[in-house]
Length: 174
Image (tube, rainbow, N blue to C red; front, top):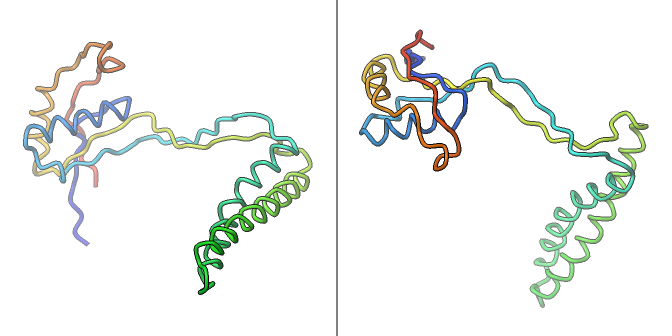
């Protein structure tokens, strides 16, 4: 496999800044298919959104079971050749109710089985500390020169924040 050697041409603290740099390269006619944005020093962040009691567990389970139940009921309803629309909608409704009930029961069972060990709800996401814009080594110098033309400070009232990062030429990335 022949891997192209890439070099870091700029580093930014936010994804929007890196995206703006690549957009600038695109506007200048640069071959952006030879560029990548790489998140560095990635960490997992789990944001706690609230408590999870028996009612919340049942509600989350019901929501998780309702859609698959409705979909399965609708598919079975379509197999009725005499009146597929009415039977499809009716069985979808039955499937929705049945799926919600089964999901609520499973949600309660799983919550009870944990015995209070994880009685909170959360959302997980990945968060890099910086974003490197890399380019193929053959075109990296041109990209650095084009990014040097990019204004570094922008009015915060129009962009939602100031751009403070400067493009830089960096080590090769393979």
